[in-house]
Image 1 (spheres, rainbow, N blue to C red):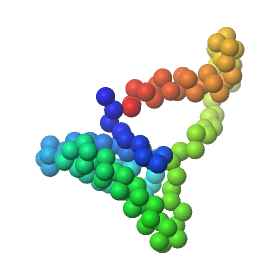
Image 2 (cartoon, one colour; image 1 turned 120 degrees about the vertical axis):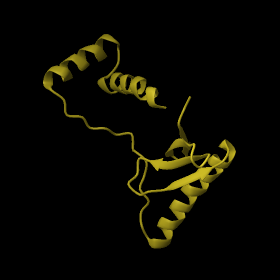
Image 3 (cartoon, rainbow, N blue to C red; image 1 turned 30 degrees about the vertical axis):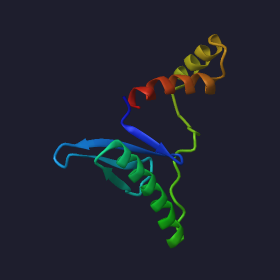
Length: 113
């Protein structure tokens, strides 16, 4: 089960408010605060898409560059011993370090989607 949605590269974190009896979402991965809500999944999806479109349009109107979702590039600083262990694990699996790390991170990240 997933608590997120994706539209035009933007992801949203979804929660249920028992107090308001509706779904509430916020665009994740950007510093700007963009929220939306819906009573049904269909309404929530429509509201999310409208929120993304409104965010992009508002940025355009005020001449602001919209914050982009993550690029897919990640720089890590790790201890040399860990770097060596990762390089060995990647080589043993027949992968580059980038391929091995992407696979390992994907496994861990899938626990949150």
